[in-house]
Amino acid sequence: MELTGQERIRRILRREPVDRIGVYEQFWGDTHAVWKEQGHIREGESFVEHFGFDIEQSWPFNMVADLDYQPVTLEETETTRLVRDGNYATMRTHKLHASTPEHVDFLVRERAGWEEHIKPKLTPERRRVNFEAYRAAKERAHRAGRFFTWGGPSVFEFMKCVCGHIFMLIGMADDPDWVRDMAMTYARLTVALQEALFAEEGLPDGIWYFEDLGFKERPFMSPRMYREIVQPAHAFSIGFAKRLGLPVIMHSCGYIEPLLPGMVEAGIDCLQAMEVKAGMDLLKIYREWGDRLSLMGGIDVRVLYSNDKAKVDAELEAKIPVVKGRYGYILHSDHSIPNTVEYETYRHFLERGLALGRYE
Image 1 (spheres, one colour):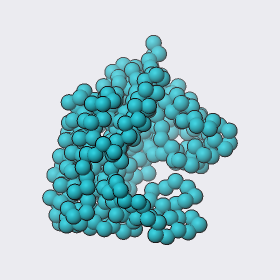
Image 2 (cartoon, helix red, strand yellow):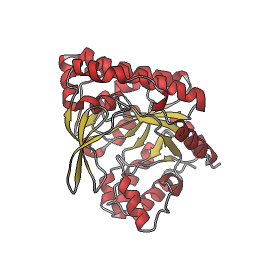
Image 3 (cartoon, one colour):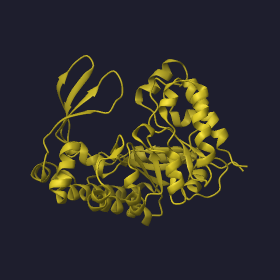
Image 4 (cartoon, helix red, strand yellow):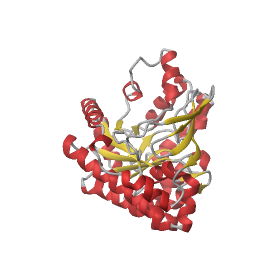
């Protein structure tokens, strides 16, 4: 029997029998522009609709510290823009293509700056929530039979936007109580806003948190530091979702395998991304965690960059027949799809992956 996306993902997150593996994907913003220009995507058409993904997300919260601050452009060239934002952080972004912003400078570098400039502003104001966008996405997803998730960053992402990785990680070593306070402040604010949103607009089908907890071959912190400083905030926000009966997906780029025991203890149901070039191994994670954790991703996006369908087939054939074994897998690359991936390559990836992922 063919399941709806909503039914399928619910079962996958519980590792219950399904008709096929799930499917979802994320893309860099300029991929949509290129594929639209080439005639593959219609104006206003989403990738979710075009490819028939099983999941739809809404990111309805504005968590910048100073909601009234107007971003200031400090410098602009033909290719980049240097901007100070409402977290009083200075970031350089590329104008010609989507990319991760470069961290340039931060007003907050230690506890005093946090307590003076940021923490007092992190209040659960109604204007932080886009109720209308959440309502529209929820209605659209359920009309189409898709699994609908509230989506947004979690505490590590918020902290690095305020003080950057360097000052945050120094703080973990020199003043862990400060970083712990930041993490719990953001967790409490997130839950307070979720309470208000869900009371007014109803529950999603699941929660999807985004955290980049690692880089190449290393997590940003030791497992002990994770458990002592970050995990309590994760457990707080994930615990709220669990009390509502909602499964929790957590994204992380980078190498985070050493942190997985603590993340599972915090309550995640599904790990998403599993970035191959950072050192993550989908098959190893499946062997060690597949009985307790559903998985999404782990397919090397660099293979898609090649636009070589034989290489794409080899990557899928090495992984999908294994990881579908416990009914807990959702097809996704290990990152986001850039515009260097040709439309026909991605379409082939999708069709071959789903063919391999069907159950008898």
